[in-house]
Image (cartoon, rainbow, N blue to C red; front, side, top):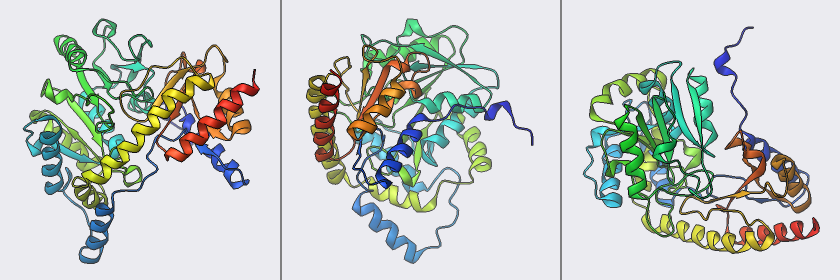
Length: 380
C-alpha cells in the first residue's frame, strides 16, 4: 500500500537506547538510566487519590474539547502564583500532553510548505512533527558560548515561526527576561509567530524561569504536567493562546482529539495543589545536578554548559569520538549506564555530543557517576 512523504520522519533515537537498556536488564544486568527524560517519581499522592475516588463516583466520559473548566481555572491560578500574571482561564487549553499542543499550535499557525525556525540542539519531535505536517524545520545552530540558545540576529530569513524552549532540552539552559524579550520582539517585528515551550518550568535551581506571557500576550505558550508534576504517562498538558485564536484551536481540538483524557485531567487538577511533594522532588534534582556538575568533569566529560533547569546536561564529546551513538553503546555495554547520543537533538553536530539525564534517584546518580569515571579511566 502507498505511503505519504509526510510519514517519512526520523526515529527518536533515545527510544532505541531505552530499548537496548531494557534488553540488558532482561538479560540480568543492572542498568543506571541517564537516558530517560522523565521523573522516576510517580504522580503526586493526592492526584492518585483524587482519581481513585472519581473512578468510583463517575463514568469519566468525554469532557469539553478545551478541558475541564475547573482545571483551566487551576492552571490560570498557577500563572498568578508562579509569575504574577492575571490570566483569563478561557485562554487555557488542556491537551493530550504537550505533543498534542504542538500539533494544534503548528496546524493553527502555519500553512503547508512554510518554514519554522528552531534552535539546535533542540527537542527532536519539533522537527518531526513539523515534517509530518508538511512544514519545513529550519535549524539555528547555537553555541556553548550562547548556552545553546538562539539570539535575535540568528533568526533565519523567510520563516513563519520560531520555537524557543527555556529551560531547554537537551541542555537545561534558560533565557533570562532580557534575552527572551529580545527574541519575542525580533520575531513580532517580522511577523513571525512565537511558540514558547515551557514544559520544564518549575524545575529551576537558581533563578526561576521566565514565561513568554510575562512579556507578550501575542504568543503561544505550551506546558505540561509531565515534568515538574511528575506525570509523563498520564498524557496531559496545556497551551495558552491569544484570545482571538481560541475558536481556531477549539475547532481543531474537537476534530483531532475530541477531548483530553478525563481521568488524567482529574489527577492533574489535584496535582496543582501538591506543592510540598513536588518541591521535595525538585530538591532531589538539585542535589543530582550538583553531583553531576562535579562528577562529570572528574570523569572526563569537561565540555558542558551548566544547566539552569530541567534535569539534563549536554556534553560535547567530539574530542572523544566522531560517533556518539557508538560511544553511547560502548558506555551501556561496558559501564551499564544508558546515555543518549546527541543525534536526536542536532542532526548536523549531534554525532559529537551526549545528553545525560539526572532525573533518577540520587543513589542512582552517584552509582552512575562512579561507573562513568571507571569507564573513562579504562579508555586511557
